[in-house]
Length: 414
Image (cartoon, rainbow, N blue to C red; front, side, top):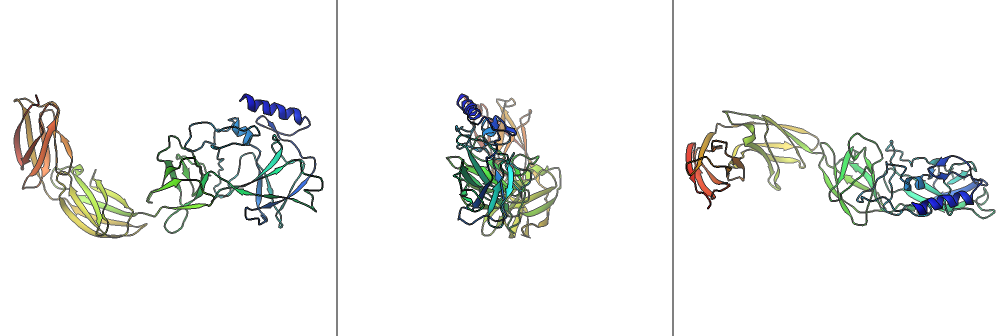
């Protein structure tokens, strides 16, 4: 902070005639004459009839005046350079309009039909050490373009007869692009870092949801690539490696296929004892979800013919099954009938008393804890079910439980 403060103090001494609005601790200084500048894209083609920003807020951001510009993958503040530029990690400005991303506090100019922009002496800009003008072309679906014109320019250069040429470079250190569905339509989405301790909103639009974007994104990338998860309601999530790219990228989140299931329950068995399992002949099991009521909804990252099974969670047995055809962006209704099931009641004792903490493990791996009276109730087929009894202070024991009550005396571990 001391070195940066000295730089600002030196700037004030070198340019005592500077005037205009203050930007943080930096004074926006006028030019001594109008400058004609031809702006060229990285491929040397003039940018005709394109809006260009004169960025004038970078040093203010370096001083910490903006809390809107965090970076991905680093808990530290950006490093500071004497002339106000930021080394990585650097801030990523946001804009409320995803189709027109802009830097905050930027002077905006438009090139003419030949790619020329005229900078008038009164145009607001940041005075730097050494002095220069930085040109920015924000792009909603790709890395931005930056260029710099060192000041002062030689006499006779920067005039209408001999404009000075500024060739822009592609922004480095970012991953930028857009998110679309399987039809190529842009979709709103959220992203989060999978293996970085801190993340930030790198999209262009504000939202009430954390890290939510309309369809475009621009995220600062670190030295070490991190994994990002992009997701959107009714779309399949995708993992993307957040490695810097000079080219825009497109993340495709296919629309999901939806199954709306209705289960007719019978007897006194709760829905939590059942699960829905979806499989394909070529891909095996593609989704599984336990029930919490007579209806359930599953979003699938598949399409075509599927088999939907109603499964008894205690044994893993299929008790009802349906064939269905699913399509992306569409919902398919499936109905099931849960058959009557018998209960296996296991009364557990140890040395004639109720065990402290004990339960059973079913063939499917489901764990059921005994109540205060040492009783476990598990729905089972009529032929019975194999269980493993385990808990504190007891030896593990395998039993065969049948419908009705089974008394089991446990052995204490000594």
